[in-house]
Image (tube, rainbow, N blue to C red; front, side):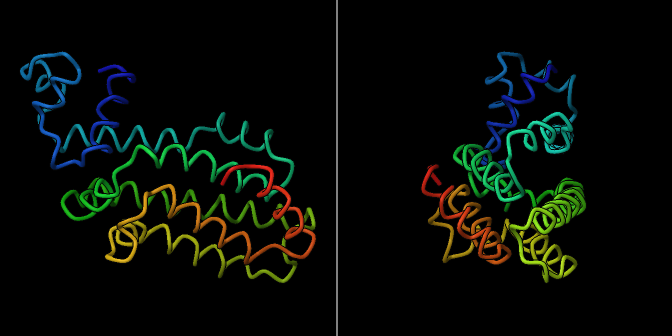
Length: 204
């Protein structure tokens, strides 16, 4: 299966949910027979495992990270650019995908979650250190506590977006509020003024 085909299947799962997408649906989307599909993957679990590997690879893309830093004037810009990118991705993701992954596919969910916890914590720590050095974040931030709290929110994100209170909102809307809440909590006065200006300039 090519990377383009895997991307198409991934979008199918994220749009309709994992359990609502059958192997027949996958074969039809790819324009191949079910027999051919089962020659590639023996089960939906195996296919989902491959999709999770692809998601992890895309998140861990060093070229993407370098581009993000080049496009960002400071640490605040990094977070704002992340919000913009995730907002676009979130428009195409059904919240039930994450809930089903956690509830019915624990092996794949653990693989993705373990990576996210490690990767996101590293990125948040780097961003906090950069923002303090640049003079846009509070100098007295306890990096260990803040990074732990942030990772804890992301770790429980599937339950959050499928709660009775929040399931009416799209994934990108919830993510945007989380990131903006995070930013407003860590900026100093200089950073707050910069953040206010940037928010007025871009659509968030």
